[in-house]
Length: 96
Image (cartoon, rainbow, N blue to C red):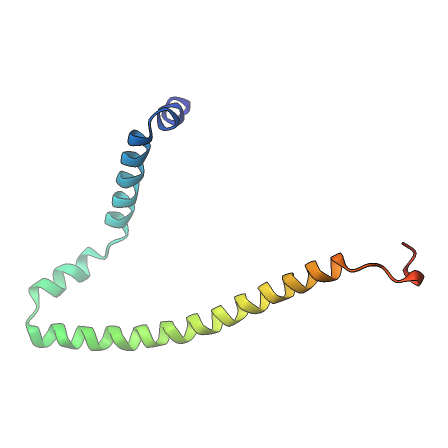
């Protein structure tokens, strides 16, 4: 493992090739190959039906993502407020 890290640090080309291989391998292992096979083996009418089902799923995912994004934005605002409060000077009766 140490040798691999040294090789990656010594040569940007090797590092880039390793990164590209890792990304390609990850994409290949996470691809839904059965769904792709089903898509290519089906008729155009069945493909259209699959697209309609997928768009419904995408709308549900978008709704959940919007809720998640609102939650993350709220967390970010809270952290920003905490930072600002931490920068404020202490009151005389707070013992600082």
